[in-house]
Image 1 (cartoon, helix red, strand yellow):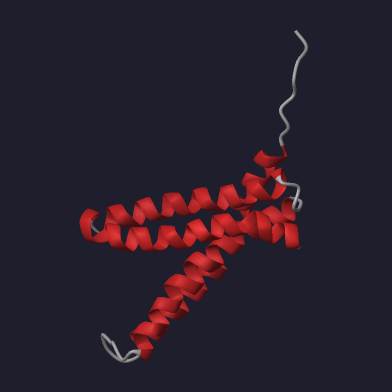
Image 2 (cartoon, rainbow, N blue to C red; image 1 turned 180 degrees about the horizontal axis):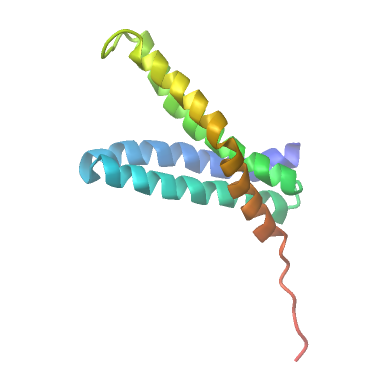
Length: 137
């Protein structure tokens, strides 16, 4: 478990930076372009986390799938969902419990997309398991 954590912590740190980078970039790029860019980088981070797990021999393919899930958990549930909860607690509201409902939607989407997220981590794990074969010339 300790070696898995060592393999995953760098992609998790980059996921935190990615979240805040695209929040700032949405002001310049516009909402749709920033969302697309953010999600492309997020998928890359899931694959990278899975790759690091198997390449560093920190875990097998199940751990690689879990690494993809960890990226999504930090990025989506903790940061995005946490932002909605904080906005609710600060008293900002667009009506009723809208921020709490948005946080609930984040949890629901995490559950709904978990198989796809695990697949991205697994894909990275499969790439990490490939060993380069040297051929004699």
